[in-house]
Amino acid sequence: MNPSWWQQIAGTIASEFSDLNDVMQTTRVVLRLVMAALLGGLLGWEREHKGQAAGVRTHMLVAMGAALFVLVSQQLGMEKDDLSRVIQGLTAGVGFLCAGTILKGDKAGEVKGLTTAAGLWLTAAIGVAAGLGRELTAVLATVLALMVLAVVPVLVKLIDKPRPLNTDEDPPRQRIQTED
Image (cartoon, rainbow, N blue to C red; front, side, top):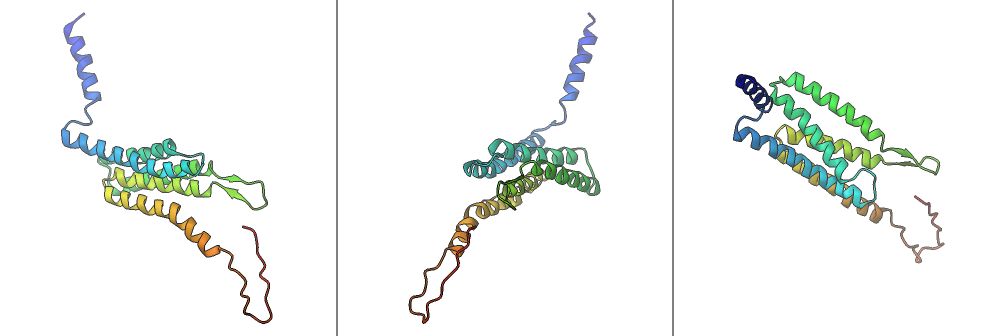
């Protein structure tokens, strides 16, 4: 075989893997994708810990996928208008994925999976932020989401806690308790 033929193959292979041609660019891509994976994983851990179907791996993949879509678009030099359309498509596409987590419950009017769906949708937005290089914004959104998922249910239980009857009232009133 002709040595130039092998050189052409080697050159073609090298050019196919040349999108990260310097240390700074490689570091940026790795940092953004790892950041998206870690932040998505935190939200997924919370959902998995609560026994939901969409857990750590699902959230990590959604966040990394969203980050990769915008990261590659930026690498291609897309203008803001074109990048906006990528984000719009991503938002709609993840919405379809989220719809798959929503189920109708056994009881009349009961719907399950809305919080997980909203969490996946937010995870995609966090991935977009990380992919665009807005890591601090992505971290802040993740912290706020974890607070919503962990603190708000406790606050709701405290607020909805049944209060004891006031025995000093004349005449005593009865309270009607309803089930949630």
